[in-house]
Amino acid sequence: MLLVQFKQADGQRRIGVLEDECRKIRVVEGYNSTYGLAQAAIAADSTLKALAAAGLGDTVLDYDTVAQARQLLPPLEHGDSAHCYVTGTGLTHLGSADGRDAMHKKISDVDTLTDSMKMFRMGLEGGKPAAGEAGVQPEWFYKGDGSIVRAAEQPLTMPHFALDGGEEPEIAALYVIGPDGDPYRLGFAIGNEFSDHVTERQNYLYLAHSKLRVCAVGPALLVGDLPAHVAGMSRIRDSQGQVRWEKPFVSGEENMSHTVANLEYHHFKYPLFRRPGDVHIHFFGTATLSCSDGIQVAHGETFEIDVAAFGPPLRNRLAVETLAAPRIHQL
Image (tube, rainbow, N blue to C red; front, side, top):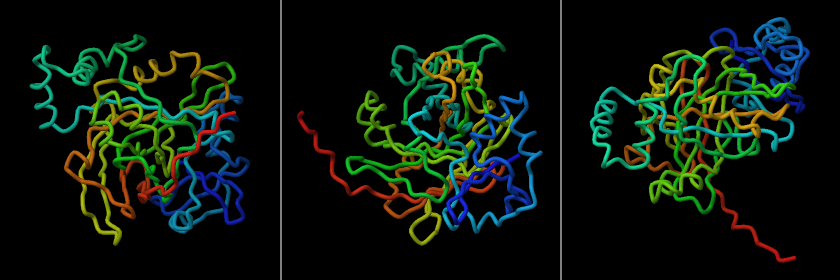
């Protein structure tokens, strides 16, 4: 099941299920948000899929019409953006077969490894523990709160101080924390974990700065489990809509050095992240970046992340902020 959130022309929020090869949205009656549907499922000890299926009504909309009107919303939001954490893990993906062979050769000499390569090696050796056990900790970063999340077809704005605005095609998992403090995973979505790779490459300790950017999630929530193998295409389209760079990418546990369960354990082991009612959007990382091929995305160009299993592509245009830094006042 692929679930979407959107606004009607009058501003009312609705949710629906994609049908007819993702060309149509059938509205789910009785709920105006994925968050509300999730809370109802928790309270009823049911599932998101069961409640959504039971609420399917007669109203059917054209997906492209909704998307072109920029009425799509991220697949999960909290009414108060401060109660949504956006986080992620890096150094989790194995990459292509050629890249994988090169990486194994590179990490064989332990004495010459950088800290990043040491972290990657740790994941290879201990990121997939037996069920019920905790493996090695992954790299982890904070990206922002719900105010940074953009929907499909909305621009991704590069700050005025940024040195780069580059895509990161990833899978994100979406969670709601139940009244008992337990995390409830709703499903997964395509994500563009938009970052500043030039800043990060100056020094790996700048990673935290490079991640404090907007990101895009959606357009659809894949309800249920993540496929073991996820294959998609990441593209950059110029201002005329022509593809000027594209490259396949893979995700899913078959292509990762960590299990999803291990990444979840090391995020939700902190009580701070188990506050009832909160929303979490957690990115799982990638091994495919246009900047690695020398591409610098320009203002007005479009990121496109296309994964058939997740429905319609995630498209976002790059914009550049023109505002100056805030003034600091002394009281």
